[in-house]
Length: 317
Image 1: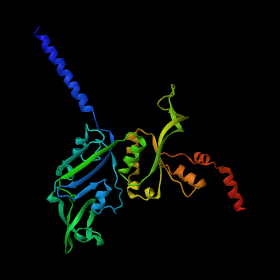
Image 2: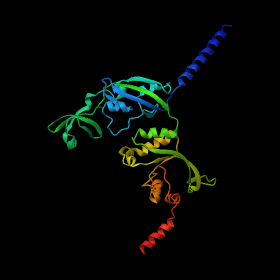
Image 3: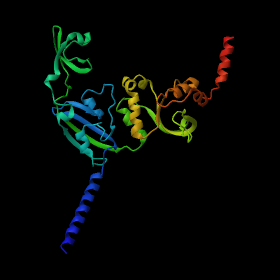
């Protein structure tokens, strides 16, 4: 008879653990896309970052080439400080919080060995003055002093050694995949873009299995029509000239494709009002991350290639 109470206690303990696990899974969790409004400052009040245009105006940074508005981040992916993510887990839309991020978890502790003396010849001539931000041998730093032909450069992050007070409000759980894509791309480039998702039917050469095939024979392919879930991005001059985009667009594309379970991305460009043939071709061929061949482009643009050739030949005569 003494075993029955013990069994009941074990069942109650299991039930309690299950309830705790359910409670832990409630609210926002790793992998969720959330839209945040936040302001981060050092403990002495220096602005680190903000999404609030009023704060940006008060601090005199609203004239920078930057958009101040709530941002979409993916929890657990390092888009914000880990301490802030931990504070958000389990919370709901509409909740807010305040977190102090220790220096070592923010921009690192200050390291005196990172203040080094280098030849002033390594600095561009127009950056040889105290306070200048310089890149030397792949490292970023700021010039402290220049004496003779030597420069003392601090390679610590400007906010190294500073704890950061981070205040935030959770505005929205972002579930629409287009909005998620905009949020991901917006982490790399601050450009307003039109984008949408479509499922396209595309002809591809697909390798087929041959039951009689041996190791020495050539693989066989056949053309099949497959569906491709495609994110279309309407390019703009601002995007095309954005250095961050030009340097990292393949990385950005892979990140978006992986996170949103897409097949490809097509960046298309429209030239001029009503664009006509060249605008249509520019859009089709501009999709370097998805593509399409010239014959498909001509067909979609309702252009007869043979007629163009005939017209060119008549012009030469």
